[in-house]
Length: 355
Image (cartoon, rainbow, N blue to C red; front, side, top):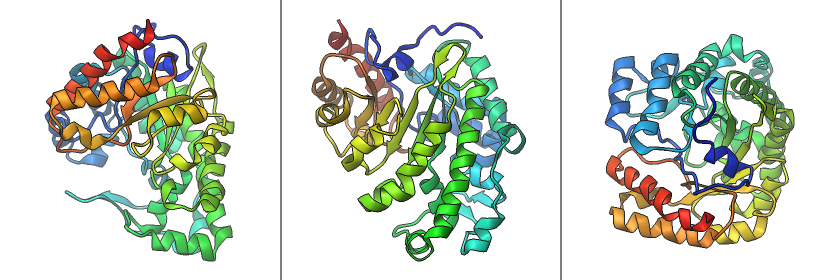
């Protein structure tokens, strides 16, 4: 493998010295880019795109060329894990993901296998990771990712997206042993999956806990955080002679930052509901912070975007351990030129904080 030409992201994750604040963006390979839409159309659908290593690499590299991002993130979907466990996944045109066979009882959960060999059940993802690393040719690091066990479980029980999460919460309250069995299987599967990504070339990994924030503090710890901590404890943290940083991100979880930092992760992802100076005061001496601009700020004009970038950088202040990102993923109808302006502002305005 060619040596990294830009390792700002990896150094920032480990709170090492950097010349400027690195920046990448959740969902940076996605529908807001016409280049992505063209590749997806060529693939003939979202899942076909996910299953083509060459096309995955193509869309992963698009924002590196267009935005000059400091990290690439594997193009895939969190729900390939439950699909590989035997569930029937589909994406309708203009619709979210659907499982035709949602989990309804303990017998359904007991039938699910644990994915212990990602090269067998999810070989196309492992091939995509290796292909992307080859095509990046050392330009920037590659981030692998997964959904958290709780977040995956919500889709598997609800059968898709949900507004009130009534089915998954009913299972959690009425059949806690069944829910714990499901989460245990998912934690073991996800740990193997991430270790497979690392072995094939992912240089950092992120766990997306999109729906952890719908839980009470008690239930968040028992049904989400404990399983993410289990995953963190099983991960290979060294590869290619370098530490592999682990990022945990719980949307809506800013009340639990200290507990998240205690898992042993290297980076805590922040949503936009907390000021970054407050988060830094709470946990910034233990972990790096990633975030946390409101994604809808990208609808604003470039001068307003720059002002917001300057405010977040000033709140974090001098020092290391900040990876600039949005507080959640970019939305599909954001003008690409606004995203370009966002990245440019971070690159230009952050230098003063690292002299």
